[in-house]
Length: 106
Image (cartoon, rainbow, N blue to C red; front, top):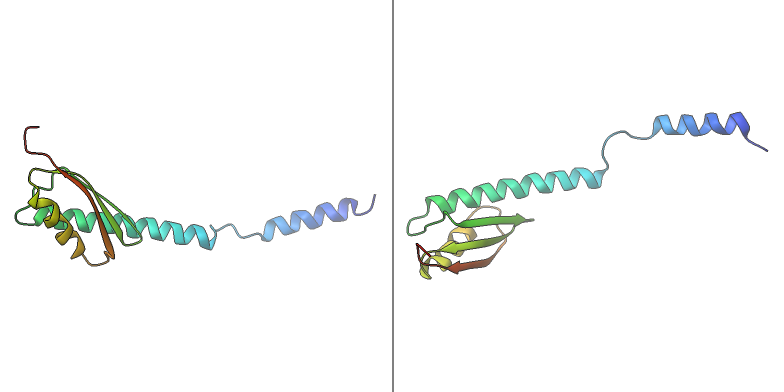
């Protein structure tokens, strides 16, 4: 058998010099998640402050600037209003509106 103790020491030495920080891909993923959460929050705040919009049943999902609105609003006119408000938030690149109109009390 060649290598023996020398090979084991070489493997141990290489293991010690491997980076212990997360990979660049992991850093980008974490940064993207943080940016998505921040955008979720910004869109939620804008929807809550918007005149003529009942946003209590609107759920926001953001990914890489693309925002999807889920849930319901009490009037059909509020569906377009929600899209307009979300589109106006800094960082939003597109809005997919999956809202449904459900009158209050239903």
